Image 1 (tube, helix red, strand yellow):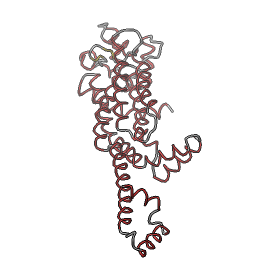
Image 2: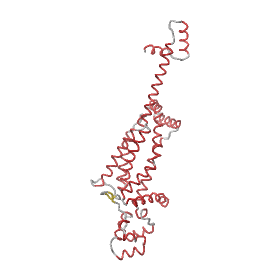
Image 3: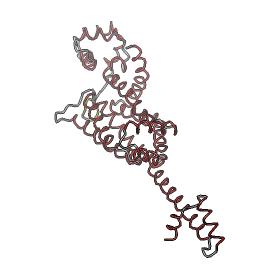
Length: 338
């Protein structure tokens, strides 16, 4: 199972190592990685917004169901599912970008925590030997990497000769410091986890939460849920809470990915929201319904004006039209008031 997961991670790790090689900056590599993955998922985001637009088109039906079955939640859910099936709408479509983002986060987490394996392409048997040679017992590859680099840069001739003999692939690190991975970005070591203590790492969760709130606000502005009368408050706070949990749980590099991803999504959601705005669709539906109602009323009014109430034959025709359902006598009363 571990080997299967490794093969899934390798293409992403290879791409990330290319970005790091291009920028020679760990933070910029993460930012570029985030932007590329977000750009790849734009078609899914467009599909998501179009799905919300489709939901907005039948929001009057949703409102009617909510009013009809407001005291019977089970029946409401059943009728909602029937409506979704009838309209060909899948509520899970909106969750697809988020569902795809989760594996990418865990893949990036694995790349960050295992630099020897993924960024330096060292096989598992070599990594195991490094643990024994360096005396690292906590099975933390970041710690192991620092220990290995410490030995290489120690200047100890015996250690250098040992590495040269047994690990010739590391010879380049003796003379070229640019090959050594620098995990720092600005004033942060991106391999370290943020803590609740007041220090320089705390801004990662704070910015993640703030950008999460901003993203939720922009999303709700163009959300079909809001237009169909559903309560969006839970979604308003769910995003920032998820941001906090993830950024406190994982290394700061994941937090940087999350922040850049939120900023990108805010801009993207604004653009897509303006292009496919559910609010405009709902307003158009309401305008069309009002226009249709006015047109029917004008039609009935025009029919009424055709009759000469002093003419017996016209009165007979009027009574026949009422019987045939052209309009009712109550309509006649309401029309005569206008």
